[in-house]
Length: 185
Image (cartoon, rainbow, N blue to C red; front, side):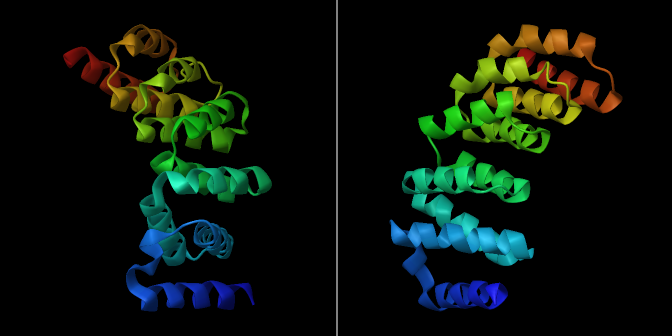
């Protein structure tokens, strides 16, 4: 039944053309619900379509996306909602991502470290520098990559320290690459 609902909403959106591009209020909530159903069903086409719709809706989608994140208990759904937020959100999203980076389960800390780089908000630099000390290698790698994307030279000492403490070759590679990039700027 859920798959039929998801497919019906998707078909209606495809037929209506650009109607979804002016999503407001109830339509945003409907797009989020459709996205969540598509994630749960493994329907990547519909999930990605809703991601695009929500990105186009922009900041109007921030509150409803955060609400959906808070209500969900499925880490896969939460992870995708964080990804979507990183493309639409503002200050509230940045603070939510920093909170997840500090206190979330490992899969969500990984996503938050990556999403903060996507947001291109230099206010996240201190939290990302701290994340270079995370117990999880992928959180540290994602933090290093995000720091490189943010192009903030304040991160150089933290990346130097992380490089000295790095354990694996993959981690060293990403830290060195982003450290070198920052030093060239």
